[in-house]
Image 1: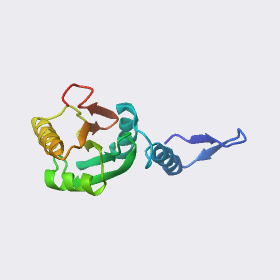
Image 2: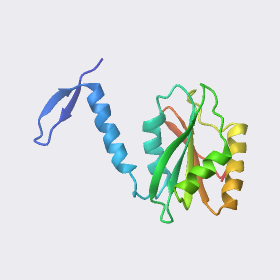
Image 3: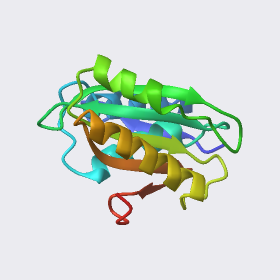
Image 4: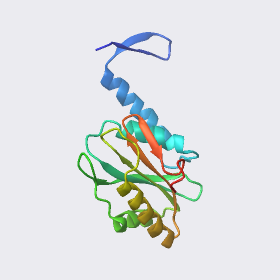
Length: 160
Protein backbone atom coordinates (compact mmCIF):
# COMPACT_ATOMS: atom_id res chain seq x y z
CA UNK A 1 0.00 0.00 0.00
CA UNK A 2 1.24 3.48 -0.85
CA UNK A 3 2.19 5.83 1.96
CA UNK A 4 -0.05 8.85 2.30
CA UNK A 5 1.45 12.20 3.22
CA UNK A 6 -0.49 15.12 4.64
CA UNK A 7 0.52 18.71 5.13
CA UNK A 8 0.02 20.39 8.49
CA UNK A 9 -0.84 24.06 9.03
CA UNK A 10 2.88 24.94 8.99
CA UNK A 11 3.45 23.38 5.55
CA UNK A 12 5.29 20.31 6.83
CA UNK A 13 4.48 16.88 5.39
CA UNK A 14 4.19 13.72 7.45
CA UNK A 15 3.08 10.15 6.80
CA UNK A 16 -0.54 9.51 7.70
CA UNK A 17 -2.57 6.39 8.33
CA UNK A 18 -5.22 5.83 5.62
CA UNK A 19 -7.90 5.52 8.31
CA UNK A 20 -7.00 8.95 9.66
CA UNK A 21 -7.22 10.48 6.18
CA UNK A 22 -10.63 8.89 5.59
CA UNK A 23 -11.87 10.06 8.98
CA UNK A 24 -10.83 13.62 8.22
CA UNK A 25 -12.46 13.42 4.79
CA UNK A 26 -15.70 12.29 6.46
CA UNK A 27 -15.52 15.30 8.78
CA UNK A 28 -15.07 17.67 5.81
CA UNK A 29 -18.04 16.11 3.98
CA UNK A 30 -20.15 16.20 7.15
CA UNK A 31 -19.52 19.95 7.47
CA UNK A 32 -20.77 20.43 3.91
CA UNK A 33 -23.82 18.27 4.65
CA UNK A 34 -24.80 19.57 8.07
CA UNK A 35 -28.14 20.85 9.34
CA UNK A 36 -28.92 24.30 8.00
CA UNK A 37 -26.69 24.01 4.93
CA UNK A 38 -28.51 24.83 1.69
CA UNK A 39 -28.40 22.24 -1.07
CA UNK A 40 -28.32 24.52 -4.08
CA UNK A 41 -27.42 21.91 -6.70
CA UNK A 42 -27.54 18.15 -7.24
CA UNK A 43 -23.73 18.16 -7.29
CA UNK A 44 -23.54 19.07 -3.60
CA UNK A 45 -25.79 16.20 -2.60
CA UNK A 46 -24.02 13.76 -4.93
CA UNK A 47 -20.63 14.52 -3.39
CA UNK A 48 -21.77 13.74 0.13
CA UNK A 49 -23.83 10.71 -0.85
CA UNK A 50 -21.04 9.14 -2.91
CA UNK A 51 -18.67 9.40 0.03
CA UNK A 52 -21.26 7.96 2.41
CA UNK A 53 -22.58 5.11 0.25
CA UNK A 54 -19.79 4.13 -2.16
CA UNK A 55 -18.48 1.17 -0.19
CA UNK A 56 -21.77 -0.27 1.09
CA UNK A 57 -22.24 -3.94 0.30
CA UNK A 58 -26.02 -3.82 0.76
CA UNK A 59 -28.70 -1.49 -0.55
CA UNK A 60 -29.97 1.35 1.61
CA UNK A 61 -32.72 3.86 0.92
CA UNK A 62 -32.79 7.25 2.58
CA UNK A 63 -34.14 10.75 2.40
CA UNK A 64 -32.81 14.25 2.91
CA UNK A 65 -35.43 16.51 4.49
CA UNK A 66 -35.24 20.19 3.55
CA UNK A 67 -36.93 23.42 4.59
CA UNK A 68 -38.45 26.03 2.24
CA UNK A 69 -35.00 27.43 1.37
CA UNK A 70 -33.70 23.90 0.67
CA UNK A 71 -31.59 23.91 3.82
CA UNK A 72 -30.95 20.51 5.35
CA UNK A 73 -33.14 19.60 8.29
CA UNK A 74 -31.87 16.03 8.47
CA UNK A 75 -30.71 13.10 6.39
CA UNK A 76 -32.25 9.79 7.36
CA UNK A 77 -31.37 6.27 6.26
CA UNK A 78 -34.80 4.63 6.25
CA UNK A 79 -34.45 1.10 4.88
CA UNK A 80 -31.70 -1.46 4.57
CA UNK A 81 -31.86 -4.28 2.06
CA UNK A 82 -29.72 -6.96 0.52
CA UNK A 83 -27.10 -6.84 -2.21
CA UNK A 84 -29.69 -6.21 -4.91
CA UNK A 85 -32.72 -4.55 -3.35
CA UNK A 86 -34.39 -2.81 -0.44
CA UNK A 87 -38.09 -2.66 0.35
CA UNK A 88 -39.40 0.90 0.55
CA UNK A 89 -42.65 1.65 2.35
CA UNK A 90 -44.15 5.02 1.26
CA UNK A 91 -46.12 5.37 4.51
CA UNK A 92 -42.90 5.35 6.57
CA UNK A 93 -41.15 7.74 4.18
CA UNK A 94 -44.04 10.24 4.36
CA UNK A 95 -44.25 9.89 8.15
CA UNK A 96 -40.55 10.70 8.50
CA UNK A 97 -40.89 13.82 6.31
CA UNK A 98 -43.89 15.02 8.32
CA UNK A 99 -42.06 14.43 11.61
CA UNK A 100 -39.18 16.58 10.30
CA UNK A 101 -41.63 19.26 9.09
CA UNK A 102 -39.98 19.08 5.66
CA UNK A 103 -41.06 21.38 2.84
CA UNK A 104 -39.04 19.41 0.27
CA UNK A 105 -37.18 16.11 0.10
CA UNK A 106 -34.52 14.29 -1.88
CA UNK A 107 -34.40 10.50 -1.93
CA UNK A 108 -31.29 8.38 -2.32
CA UNK A 109 -30.29 4.78 -2.54
CA UNK A 110 -27.25 2.86 -3.63
CA UNK A 111 -26.61 0.06 -6.07
CA UNK A 112 -23.79 -2.12 -4.68
CA UNK A 113 -23.25 -3.46 -8.22
CA UNK A 114 -21.94 -0.02 -9.24
CA UNK A 115 -24.50 0.34 -12.04
CA UNK A 116 -26.33 3.63 -11.52
CA UNK A 117 -29.00 3.32 -14.21
CA UNK A 118 -32.43 3.22 -12.55
CA UNK A 119 -34.34 -0.03 -12.72
CA UNK A 120 -38.04 -0.18 -13.51
CA UNK A 121 -38.64 -0.72 -9.77
CA UNK A 122 -36.59 2.41 -8.97
CA UNK A 123 -38.69 4.46 -11.37
CA UNK A 124 -41.95 3.03 -10.03
CA UNK A 125 -41.18 3.71 -6.36
CA UNK A 126 -40.04 7.22 -7.23
CA UNK A 127 -43.36 7.93 -8.94
CA UNK A 128 -45.34 6.40 -6.03
CA UNK A 129 -43.42 8.54 -3.55
CA UNK A 130 -43.85 11.64 -5.70
CA UNK A 131 -47.63 11.05 -5.79
CA UNK A 132 -47.78 10.48 -2.03
CA UNK A 133 -45.77 13.62 -1.31
CA UNK A 134 -47.90 15.73 -3.64
CA UNK A 135 -50.90 14.92 -1.41
CA UNK A 136 -49.17 16.44 1.61
CA UNK A 137 -47.68 19.35 -0.38
CA UNK A 138 -44.03 18.38 0.07
CA UNK A 139 -41.87 18.87 -3.02
CA UNK A 140 -39.77 15.96 -4.29
CA UNK A 141 -36.64 17.58 -5.70
CA UNK A 142 -34.57 14.57 -6.69
CA UNK A 143 -33.79 10.90 -6.28
CA UNK A 144 -30.14 9.88 -6.44
CA UNK A 145 -28.71 6.46 -7.19
CA UNK A 146 -25.14 5.95 -6.00
CA UNK A 147 -22.96 3.20 -7.44
CA UNK A 148 -19.35 3.29 -6.33
CA UNK A 149 -18.06 6.74 -7.29
CA UNK A 150 -20.85 7.36 -9.82
CA UNK A 151 -24.17 9.07 -9.15
CA UNK A 152 -27.40 9.31 -11.11
CA UNK A 153 -29.89 12.13 -10.63
CA UNK A 154 -33.54 11.59 -11.59
CA UNK A 155 -34.08 15.35 -11.92
CA UNK A 156 -31.01 15.89 -14.10
CA UNK A 157 -32.17 13.02 -16.31
CA UNK A 158 -35.69 14.40 -16.66
CA UNK A 159 -37.39 11.59 -14.71
CA UNK A 160 -38.81 13.89 -12.03
